[in-house]
Image 1: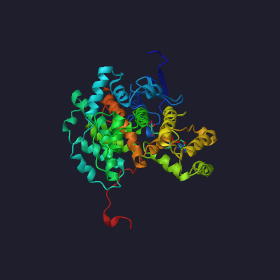
Image 2 (image 1 turned 90 degrees about the vertical axis):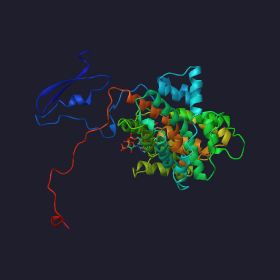
Image 3 (image 1 turned 120 degrees about the vertical axis):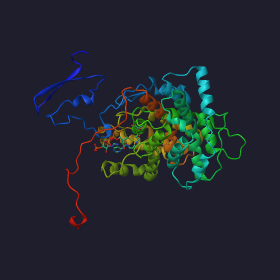
Image 4 (image 1 turned 90 degrees about the horizontal axis):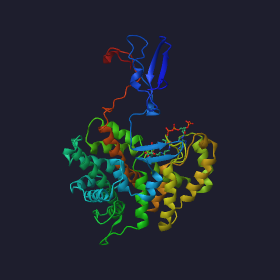
Length: 432
Ligand code: SDX
């Protein structure tokens, strides 16, 4: 280690100096513990609410450069994967670290295709929901319920068992999602068709009616595949961080995925694509945009949904690709009436000092909702469409965490701000 790869810290409370090693652009937080103001002192910790500047793991899966707007899965640029790959091939890449050869891809596609069927008892879980239950609530419950059919999934360190659960979860996400939709609209469940691609099978289970065999529209099938590729993983986002934290207790992957899906459900995360459409609908016309922007800048809690990102301080590379896919979908479905409002809103925001100063650009959610709406997905289904492909990212990150010798059960520390020690007060002595 070169002498420059260290941090020299002087504690002015004691005059003591410490030399901490710097590696991979970080210092180990535990190295701060030795810095004490006296013998009784616990030692220094870092205080980092929302982990704004904390690396919780080392990962080889996804690389993001927020300033340059770069996103790579296992080193492959997202632009190339979106153009040349499929979601299933990308899921394989995320999980295994390399693109599959022809026989590996063939076997992987066969395995996933033949695991799309659900245990019939799970229909009872779905039937217990009211017709207006949010599909994310159903998805989270169904994933957890799914795990109860595979008690062996608790053997997370048995590689064969672990891989089997990973295959089941990736395969069954489209069936659970589609069955939830069919329950919402009161349609009979349409079962998987093993002749179809992963996105094509999802469209089949969503929209098949009385025809003998559902034929997905190729352009829509491809557009959905690209959207699944773009949403598959994104480094240590909120839901992946939840997946790693829950998984660190060594619970089964179904329970961890259910928790990750719950995190994704939030309007600031995977729920944003639904909120974008609600926002654009509320704006209603291009002439109302200036007033809406004023409300956002007034800071009265109104956000420009689909804008901003914790990491990207440049245009989200996925948003660029999605914008292109949107036009391909509109060629088939007809243009969304909200598109012009979205385009004008983006144009105005990108020229406005408030957004420029805060480096707020369109993120993955800004245009994706327009595509989903054009493809007749109800708004409630939008976060579900995010969760379907993200499950391969969650599982890839979970598996990496399990096999990382640095990792153990996640248990952050705190700064205590509560009452000092005090004795119990009987009812008669308490203030009225
Ligand atoms: C996803 O992490 C990931 O990788 C997530 C994701 C993935 O693939 O997993 O990329 C998917 O979740 C995309 C984000 C979808 N969410 C939204 O579009 C909701 C709207 N966006 C914001 O809520 C916000 O931008 C976040 C949550 C995405 C990021 O928030 P940060 O990093 O905590 O930033 P912040 O809230 O501290 O904002 C910094 C400033 C604040 O202003 P000041 O207090 O400094 O004056 O920017 C403002 C914020 O008010 N701001 C916005 C804004 N986002 C941030 N102002 C208006 N509209 C917005 N959208």
